[in-house]
Length: 168
Length: 389
Image (cartoon, rainbow over all chains, first blue to last red; front, side, top):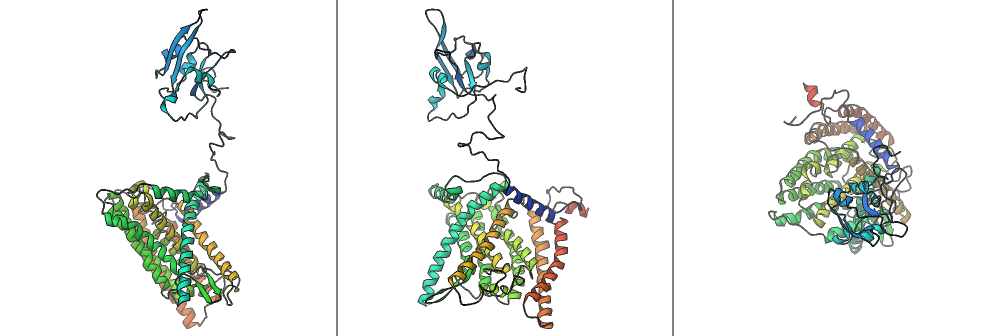
C-alpha cells in the first residue's frame, strides 16, 4: 500500500465488490424508469410538489388606492430603515396638505430583499413581491420608478409573522 | 480489381459516416441515460427529444476559440488529437458487421477490409491510441496533463496484456485470427457463441476493454476530481472534441469486438438461415440488425457502468490489473488450451454444442474462485491492509 493512502477499517467479511457492483447496477437501472423530478422551467413554473413560497421576497410592488394613486404618504420610514439605502424618496404636498411621493425610486441592484420596507410601511403601500423573473437588457432598467412599481401585478409577499411562525 | 476498389471506397464512406453519426448519437445517449439514472431528463430541447444536441455541440465546438498554451510543444500539441482519433476509427475497419451482400457483379463482404490478420490488426491499432493521449499530456506542458498521460500509458500497458491473453482463448477455439472466420465458427448454434465456452475470457475482456477505453471505473487518465481533466486539460474547441470522438469510437469498436468475439458477431441465434448462401439483401439487413442490437447493448452497458461505479484508486487499478487479471488470464489460457486439447485431440470431439457446453462447465468451475477473490474485496476494496495486520 503506497504511503499516504487512507485505508478504511472494514472487516474482510463485510467487504464486497462484485455483489455491491451488481446491486448498484440494478439500482441505476431501476432509476431509469422512475418518474423524473425535472421541472421544465419556462413552460412549467410550479409542480405538484413545488410552488414558490408565499413568503418569497422578490422585486417590489407599490399598492394603489381606488383612484389608482400610490398608497404611499411619503412618510420617509422605508428609506430610513432600508439597510441597503436603495430607496430614493422626495416627498411632496398637495393643497389639502396630503403628502405624496414626488419621486419614489428603488434600485433593485442595491436592494438586499430584506423586506423591512414592507414591514415598516404604516400605509401597507410598498411591498416585496412573490416574483423572480427580472431580467432586463440594460442596468438602468433596474431602478424602478413609482409608475413602474405601481404597474407591477404579481402577488405580494406575506412576510414572516412571529406570532404565526409556520404560516398557518 | 475495379469492383474491389469501388466497393471498398463505398464501404469506407458508408461505415465512416455511420460511425460518426453513431458517435454523435452516443454522446446524446450518454447524457440522456445518465440523466435518467439520476431522475433527471437530460438534454431534450434541441430537436425532437434533444436528438440534434450533438449537432449543436459540434457547431459550438467548431466556432469556439482554439487555445494554444504558450509553453506547449506546438507540433505535438496540434497532432495529438489526430493521433488518438485516427487509430480509434481505423480499428473498426476489420470488424464484419453483416452477412455478404449480393450484387449483380458478385458478393460483397460486409467488412471494410477482410484482413487475414484481422484480430492482430485490432490489437496493434488499439494500443496506438494511447500515443495520442500520452503526447497530448506531455506536449501541453502542464503537470496535471502529464500525470494523466502517464496514467494512461501505465493503464494501457497493464490491461493490454490481459486483453490479449483473454482473446488468445478465442483464437484457440476459432483456430484463426480472421474475424469473419471467428464469427463463422461461432454461428453453429447458440451454445457455440463464445460467451458460453469462454465466459471468463469475456469477463476479462470486458474489464480490460473498460480500462483500454479509459471509461469509468478506469478513467484515471481523465480523473476530473484529481487531475482537473487529465490529458486534455489544455485543449479547447474541436481539438477537445476530437478526444471525445476518439473515446467514443474506441467504445464503439470495443462493443463491436465484444459482439464479434463473444456473441456471434452478426449471427442471428436459433436459426441457420442467416449463415448459408445464397445471400440476399434481406439476410444482409437482418444480420446487420442483429449486429447493431448486440453492439448497442454493449454501448448501453458502457454507459450503465460509467454512471454506476466510482473510479478506482490508482493502486487498486494496478493491483487489479497485475495481481488478478494478468495471472488469471494466463491460467485461463493454459486451462482452456488443455481442455481443448483433451476434448479435441484425445477424445476426438468435433467443435459443436457439446464441446462448447463442456468448456462452459470448466468456466463455471473457474468462476467460483475468481469471483470469490474479487468479491471479498482483498484487491479492490480498502480492507487489504487490515487483513495483513
